[in-house]
Image 1: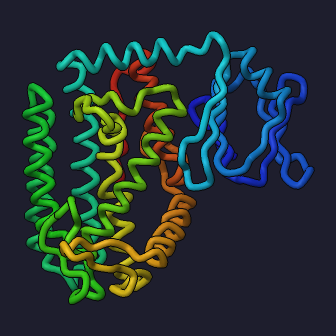
Image 2: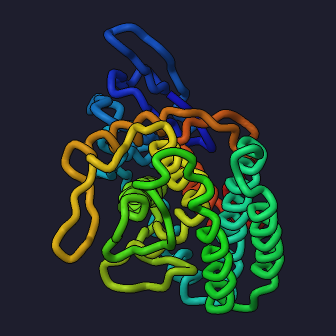
Length: 343
C-alpha cells in the first residue's frame, strides 16, 4: 500500500478493500492492515488480484473517486468512475495542449531533459563504479556531450528541433553502450541500435524492455485519466501510444537500459535464451522471455528516492507518479512538468 499525491496504490494482490464508514478499510488474510479516509484521496489504483467491495465502489462513484484495475504485470484492465469525474476536462486540456506547438515544446523540453540527464548519469555511474575496467576518458567525453545537449534542448524553439537534439544525443549515448557490458562480451557485443527487427541479442533485449516499459506508461496514463494516444513530442499517429512514448523517454536509460545491462553482466540471460529467424531477426525463446519478465517484475519491487516527492517509491509505481505529475501540470496545479531526474 502506498499513498502518493492523493492516489492510493495497492501493490499487493493479497489485499482486500472495503468500506468502513467514510474510510477505505484494507485487509490482508482477514486482518486489518490499514485504513485511509476517503476525503484524503481522489483515486485508487489496484495491481494484481486485489479485491474491492461493491459498497466501496459505490461510495467512490458517489464521491467522484476513480478506481483503476491493473493486472499483476501492470497492464491496464479497466476503471470505475463517478458520473461527475473530471477526467473529461483533463483530456480536453490535453488535446488543447497537443494542438499548441508552444505548449508541446514546453512539456517535451522537460521530458527530454529528463532523458538526457538520466542517460548522462548512467554513463557517469559506470565510469565511477568500474573505473579500472572501462575507458573512462571516452565515457567522460560522451557524458560532457550529453550535458551540453541538455542546454541545447532547453533552447529549442519547437519539437522538431528538439527531436534533432535528442536524436544526436541518443547516438552519442549508444556509441559507448557496449562499454557498459562487462560480461559475455563475445555473445553480447553491441555495435549500434537496431530496432525493426533487432539483429543481435542486446537489441532484442532493449526492444523487449521498451515494449514492457511502454505498456507500463500506457497503464499509468489511463489510470490518471489521460489519453495515451495523444502526445506532445511524439505526434498523433493511428495506433501509436504517442504520450506513452513521450513519458517513457525519461525511463529508457535509467530503467530499461540498466536492467538489460544487469541481466547480461549477472549472466541471468545468455545466448541460449534467443533464436534467430531466417531474416536474421533475433527474438527471445519462450523460456528466455519468461526469465526476462520474471526479473522485470522483481525490478519493479525495487525502491528509489523520488527526486520531486522526496520520498522512497517502488520503481513499479514511479510511472504512475510521473503520470500524476503531468496531469497536475495540465490542471494548472504545477508551474511546469517535473521530469524524473535520477542520480
